[in-house]
Image (cartoon, rainbow, N blue to C red; front, side, top):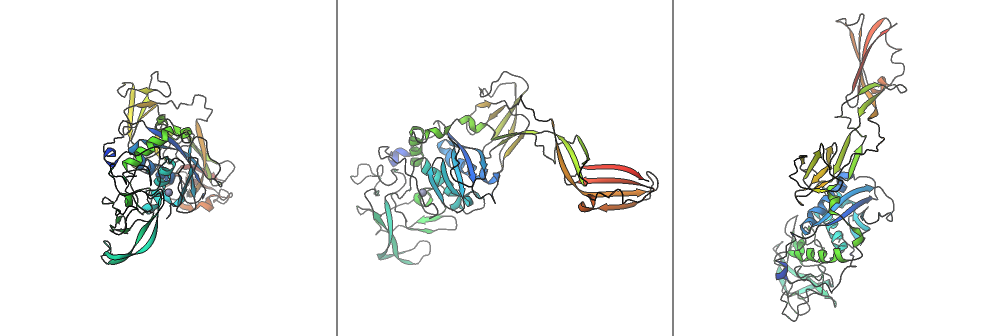
Length: 467
Ligand SMILES: [Zn+2]
């Protein structure tokens, strides 16, 4: 299977699972948020961009937010080695295959393809699988291998509707989990064997499953395939086949018991504690940029021919300031005209001095907010507004930025007298526009109106009389 490696550093039989019935009553609604910063090291440096990394983080949030685990993208690099981890941050290394490896919180290796939005689901689920390991949950089949063997009585395969005379049989160890979920049964060991989690059914490394469609697998019940006390494996709700911690394709679920276990382990384990961050991190833009105006929308202060480079125009635009948030949440962005807020304050959302704008997220790319953001509310998480002040009072950044843009078209209108109704029109391409002898080659004793258009549509125009 693609997820070929597991990390079991947190497995601790002393942390006992609740029973299946107890787990059904668990709610995570009022639990403390658990937050991590995540940094992406892209070892491939070729095909992915920030949108892909953000998609992976968004996917992680979609799977883990139900347990009040939150992930904040803080940046990426294009690294060539796997030992440049940033301290106190979950470091994800994108490797050049489709598998995953959870070595530790500072070294989570995920196949690059998993971050590609169009990949089959198995790839993307690898992200959730490996992070599950980091937070202390293990494979659903832990402690039980599988061997292929013949059946005494053939079954009818429910997917192909044909007789099947073979199956995978469990290969037991001292850590194998029994089928019973009745805590009063002397064979009950679901809380201390296998994955130590009661609401993931006992299973083996390769469960007997078949493809129900091209997006799901179903469990195949075979009476002869039994646990070590003779009870047949069951999974009537296909919990194992859908579970992130199985090796079955098309995984898309954690169980309540897995969430409980991750929340038991993560806040209390000294190994993971240094990696916890504050929930306020999630409210901060992951990037705040000054001086990079958008060439297509920012107003132009001036545009002149580049003095030292024919065929180019120097375009001056006011610097832009904007904040960039990761996708996956609805942001309510607040600005204030006046007030005494201090960075990091949590304020009452009814405060009248706040002005707000909604930025609902409906894309997999960054949520960009122009201007200065003072406060952020994420309604999905809480009613709190976290106040920040991104005004950079010490900034020495120039109030404008000059970009040098190539001229792609030069239109020349030639007449005998200025503004005469008849004339000759000539259009030059980009290469011709860059000719240093352009003016010299124009016809003498004529008026020439020269209009240059750059790649972003900026136009400059002048009229000359050629002696
Ligand atoms: Zn694994």
